[in-house]
Length: 221
Image (cartoon, rainbow, N blue to C red):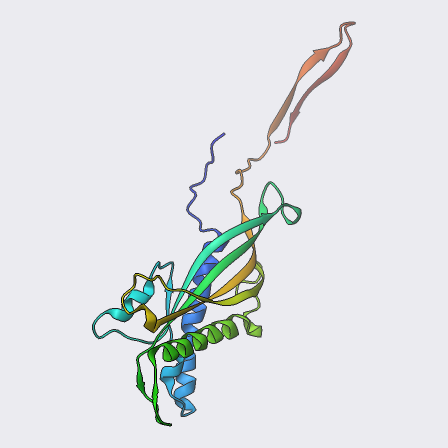
């Protein structure tokens, strides 16, 4: 029997990815405002958020590009636990997302003396970005990412440095880090549309000796 409903509803893992992206973007913008109000350099809190990009860091090398750190949110995998779901309606999905952070460094004079090399500036930028990502996601108010009922919880699995592809121009000025996040969520399967039962009929079955075993005709209307 074919499904009677159009499969146009996003799965939870897609909605959660979108939520992570929007949550980070909103909070980063809020941090810029808070920094300005506190008299702190707001550029230190300015991060740009992308989603499902392959190499967003290439924008660093465009003429007149914004060199503030980049954050790219993408879905990695989903694992389903048979012990916490059912075969009919809902399944528990353990979803892994990678939030890749990229920092770009430009050599500059150090007010304290000497100069800051590009690699150092890039490392400091990406570590700051990874720190902010971790703190936003693990903030108490984001325990369920604003999706309680669908999300069971979230957890930072790891934060690690990454190597940017060697073929990139000026790659030595770009440093990357990956924040790996697991979100436990419920996925729901399509259900068969039910109809009101009006009549149930049973056929007559006879035993070889002539005994009638079953016969019924029940009207529910």
